[in-house]
Image (cartoon, rainbow, N blue to C red; front, side):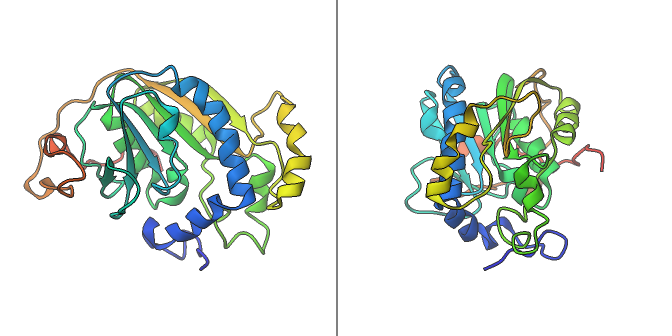
Length: 263
C-alpha cells in the first residue's frame, strides 16, 4: 500500500501505519534506529522522574527501554494487545493526560506523519513537566535523504512521503511554546540504501563529523521553561481515554486549544 502524500491523502496515521512498521524492520530502517538509539541512550540514561512517554509512529518501534524512569508509556492511535501494559490510546492531537504530568516526552518521527504537526507538538509540550525534557526526532530535509523525497520512484512511499520538517521551523515552534533548545544533533550519514551489505560498508561515514547538520535524522533536546495554566475543561472533553489503558486521574486537564503557531 502506498501513501499518496498529505496534499491528496488526509487519512489518519493508522491507515498507513503498517507500511511504517514494515519499513522500520527493513535494513535501512533498522540501521537508522540503531544509530538513533546510540545517541539517545547516554542522555536518557541520565534522566529521572516518574513518567516517560514516547509519541511515535508505532508502539512496536519503542525506545522506552533506553530510559531509567520507572513508568514508561507508549502512545498508539488504536488498541494493541501485545505492546506492553502502559499504552496510551488516543488522538495525538488531544492526549488524555494532565498538564505538566510527564517528566520526559520523546516524539519519535510522529510529527513527520500527522496532518497537524504543530498541534501534536503543542500537546506534547503541554503534558511535559516544568523543567522537564521534550526530545524530538525527525527526518532532516537538508540531507541526502531529503533529496530522495523528490525521486519519482520513492516520493509516494514511506518514509519519503513524510513531512521532513526543517530545524528552523521546529525551533520557531518550540520558542513560542517557551522551550529552551539545549542541543541539536543530526545522525545517520550513510546514504538511503536498503541493502545490509552496503550499509555495513558505508558505516565508516558515521565517524565523520562535519560542521553542518546534514545527517538524515535530527535529534532536538528541549527543556520546558514555564508550566501550563490549568484550562477550563468542556463537557465534550470528558472520558477521552480507554478504561484500563490510562488511569482515571490522567483525564484531568485535557484541553483542546488553537495551535498558536504561524502558518
